[in-house]
Length: 276
Image (cartoon, rainbow, N blue to C red):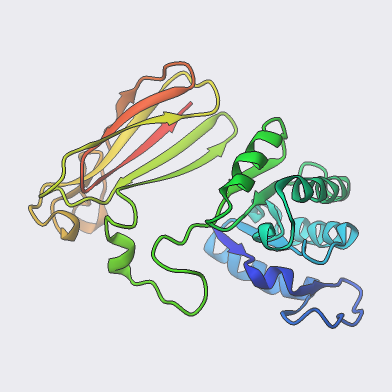
């Protein structure tokens, strides 16, 4: 998946009619021709895309026009439309942001019924936007992603984060990722602790909905090198064989109690869990 947004998303100007850009558009102008160029890459790579519309300079009708073209040009590659970027910098509180989000959502959904929407995309210091948005949008059928930005090793700007920093357990002992597609939920738990010095981590997942159960596929290594291993790595007990052959991986059941599931992940391994 590729996201086209960031701070530049709120400094760019969209036009489908060739009108001149206003003075605030320091990030440039986006046109349908630009989307078509991007679609060539996205479709060739079989990616899903999330483009952002400008929220900092409020114009719901313009955003809806951009969404209409995005749907026509990207087709099935379009995962959703991101409304704004880190709105905590230009809205005084969560309620003000949410009210404007709803105005945008109504305009976009009228132009392109059923299109996916994503938000709220606050920065790492404003998690209240995330929790409030999740609560407000719990019953919204067209929200495809609920997102927040995190910078565990640096601030966004000129700092460059290295691979060793990203893999450092000080950044996060256990990392969690989740994607929901209809009645299925895929959760990835990545325990980046060194297995030489740490034991397994047990977590309870709040699934947010009722699922019958899950299946866990483990990514592990038998190498004493742990996180630095380049051999002995298996997915579901299987390794890539000669000529790239890969037998179907094995999985184990995960019990769901109500809307929660408890999972144990050994240090230096990852678990891929599919709930349905």
